Image (tube, rainbow, N blue to C red; front, top):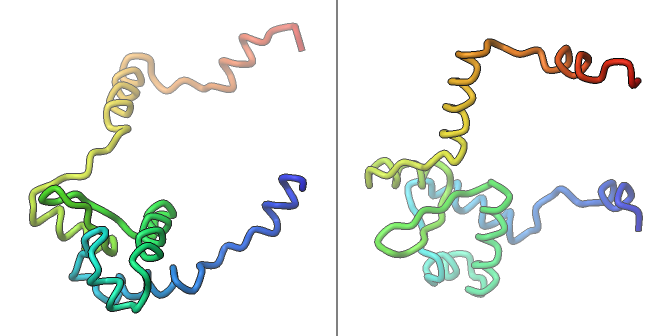
Amino acid sequence: MKVAELAKHQNKELSPLKARVLQYLEDHDDEVFRYRDGQLARALNVKLSALNFTLWGLHRDGLIDKERANGKIHFGSHHAIADLRQRLGLTKHDPFERARAIRDRIWARTGDVEVLELLDGVRGHWE
């Protein structure tokens, strides 16, 4: 199957289980749930293995968040995890923070470089 055709037919909607879990987490935005703990599975009346797989899928898609606390991974809505981080004094590390600082230092020394103008100058008579 061609990539374009596959992408066109990709279903963007959530599965029924993902939708139920997401809705439950958003409705309980003052709670976090420990990974592999049966509390959430019992509340949703689903198998623990299916729930665990669904939690990781929702996290991968950016629909929920997770944090490690007391040596355990906890999942919850973005609001619940942000509240947990704030109460524990944790800050989410931005992996691009250092790169942005270096970029800003370079821009401070060189000014804002017009990339297309620079490329046109480098290309010269070859095109």
